[in-house]
Length: 416
Image (cartoon, rainbow, N blue to C red; front, top):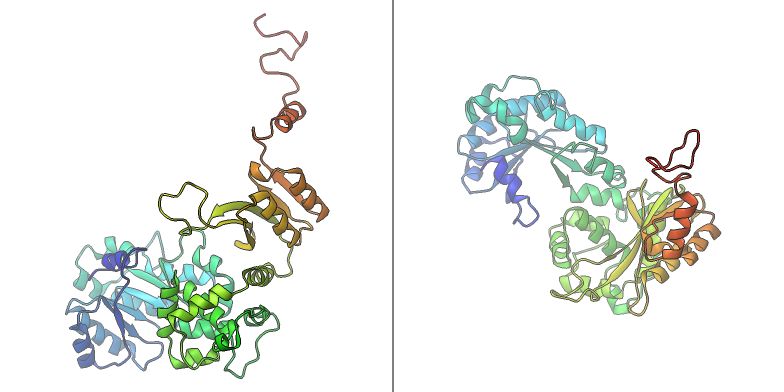
């Protein structure tokens, strides 16, 4: 299987990749595994005792059988990454990537100039992939970053979108990611303002029988699953069921919850309290800066062929410098976006913030609420408020209408 096929399998509507790890340096074991029909194999050097020379033997055995092999080096070692690719690895899974700079260094190590700084010398790779390898390597070699520490999730946007697509794929490692998000079962004390502490502040509205799984534990498990790509309750359930016992231990759980538990959990969750807690945690102590107001229908909440009024309608406040939603309210069936926006703004620290939005939010009550909170606003004005639009045209229109002579004898129409 080629790396192009692997990329296709990682598409949004694909089944994903079926793979397994090679932790042993035994060529015989690697050969047996390579014959089982996996989409690709991942040979590990980080948590194994496999040396570089042993890894070369593994690559020879497996790739000669047609297997696509990715290698995880012990760390972001540019020289070692180059040697592994030269030996026939189809891609690199790099552990402990925490910043955009590290992501860019990873991709640079996997790309020939002008896209990177990989040194030329694909001795075995050219024998394996053909004489055209150098021309195809920049598109074919996979660079996969592992996000594992507590510092990386806080800067996901920086790591995931470092400007010019610093790497192609992201592997969120469940054990280390959970270890960074919470330390329930460990002896290390969590920080005073950790996500775990904030989640513990959300009131639990479940009955006594429904509290078999702690609220914070389920929330962290669901968040980690969504960071790993789960996009519905069944995917969250399946991700949780694949967690090893030590990962569940970090959450204070003896076993993963069943699918039905997630349904009842989120049905009973105090959404307003949860959004307030998470929004406050995302905001931190910094000024909000630019905040954009917008109203959207929640995707998938309306049936097919609806008339435009069905589904769940939300008004959200998006902080640009945080690159995240800091507040969100549902528009009541008998309400509108203006009422929801007013309620949302009252719960935000507006001092020094600049609130923007489309013409729907250009309302006297909203502007006054922002000014009362010591913030500023910049809203579009359209024909839905003709009197205001006309006043603005007069106040900010051209001092001299186009087509008039502004020189000596000004005021005469040109061509008159």
